[in-house]
Length: 93
Image 1 (spheres, rainbow, N blue to C red):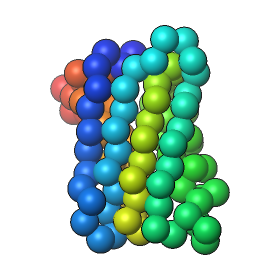
Image 2: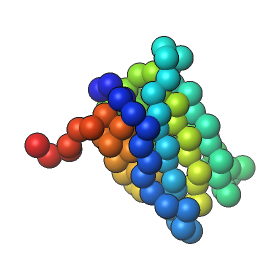
Image 3: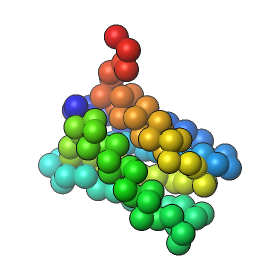
């Protein structure tokens, strides 16, 4: 899937995450994570985000996550939504 523009999903509320996706020029996947639970779950957050990106077959994006303790399912949903918005695609068409 090709990311065409910048998009966001989520909020900065407790137990949620704000995800920002933007295209980059052939730099691969650049992931930046800021989390209130980074010491405990930083590696898991990165794993979930990268797996979701891989499943969506997205390349050459910068993804910025500001996490406020979101569950893995919430992270996946936020990343999927931001990618689909950035690619101007609909999940069910």
